[in-house]
Amino acid sequence: MLEDDRKREVYAFLSEGRPLEYTKLIAVAVLIMVTAFFVAIEFSIVKVRRSRIDQYVAKEIKGAKAAKHVITHLDEYLSACQLGITVTALGLGWLGEPTVQTLLHPLFLKLGLHESLTHFLSLVIAFLLVTYLNVVIGELAPKSFAIQKAESITLMFAKPMIWFYKIMFPFIWVLNQSARLITGMFGLKPASETELAYTEEELRVLLAESYKSGEIKKSELKYMNNIFTFDKRMAKEIMVPRNEMVSLPIDDESVESLQEIIKQTKYTRYPVVKEDKDHVIGVMNIKEVLFSLLSERFSFTKEQLDPFIQPVIHVIETIPIYQLLIKMQKERTHMAILIDEYGGTSGLVTVEDIVEEIVGEIRDEFDADEIPHIRELDKNHYMLNAKVLVSQVNDLLGTDLSDEEVDTIGGWFLTQDIDAAPESVIEYDGYAFKVKDIDSHHILFIEVKKAE
Image 1 (tube, rainbow, N blue to C red):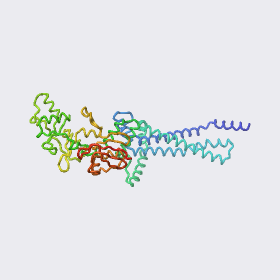
Image 2: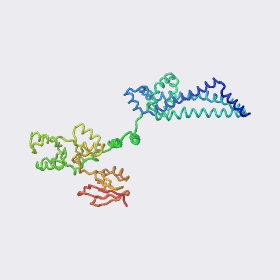
Image 3: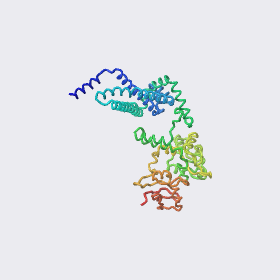
Image 4: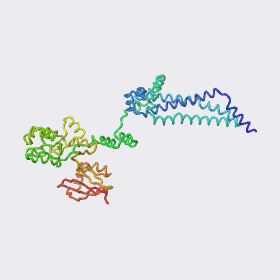
């Protein structure tokens, strides 16, 4: 009976009207929600990408202009958020714990607990309860939500944030100036003046993450990575070397010989040489010749071929390929002759060679028999064209072949064995490099496999 009476007293106490305490509880809940608002805004404006907001502004999305204003004045609005969070925290400290303690204290007394124990328990429980609610509901939950929905929150709450900033401007200005004075002593700039540019490595990481999440395709990732290495490559690394150049010797050969060269090789453009390949006088586009033949404007004689010889540009072989591409676009030519430091011809580069550095190998109907430069025969077993760059081989095999003196794997092999012959083998970094095809001293193919 005594236990039942005790329960009835407690229920009666809880059902008593305590309008002031309940009003304070509502105020505590409001303060926690306001804290959540400022925390969400703070994390969202830091997390959101400016490029996305610029896209929304261009599309005239509602709230985009306000969001643009907020993220371009990051220092001011971060200070506004911090002011809002601090004020609500002070309000919770002043109102939250005493209110909850006031409600709990009579409850513990009704339960028959000692006065000192009642005071201690009500104080501790009130502190823990208010702290828990503020941390979870006011900070952690809105922080996680803001990180995942940064764009939506920024667009939705940018205008209210601007109003709050205008109302509290004097306080925020004082806080900002004080903070800038302190950070300026350490040589730091305001957040709104900090460059938000990404390094090449950061962009690579972002692209890799975008590929993993399905935002971009594998081919797009490959193209972008190729572009990053594009400006580091030199023309001599992608050229057709001198000994592989197919040219039209306009002075010594008969017309039938020229026709046979064109028939066998089926290229569109040919460098035209006089005497030898060190004297390239121009380039001939066979399409122009063909169109003239079809229109019966001339017959295929050496004398009438002269007007079809167009000027060709000569550049040093160490020119970066991005500069060469710009020059070729400016000169409106598809072929460039590379010269070495002594003025001799070292090779040629076409626009197709440059484009292939970005998009990969391009094959037309006449490239059916073309062999890939890197062929995987088995695990850790490859057949390499001798023109493959040493850096590419290092990336493929994880080796550390030196490329200081030479660019290609064929050149590297010759530096290790000047008397290289078919089936010559060099073991290096756990791999066996074997010459599979050689023309005089010109290595054509090298077989690479894991050394036993």
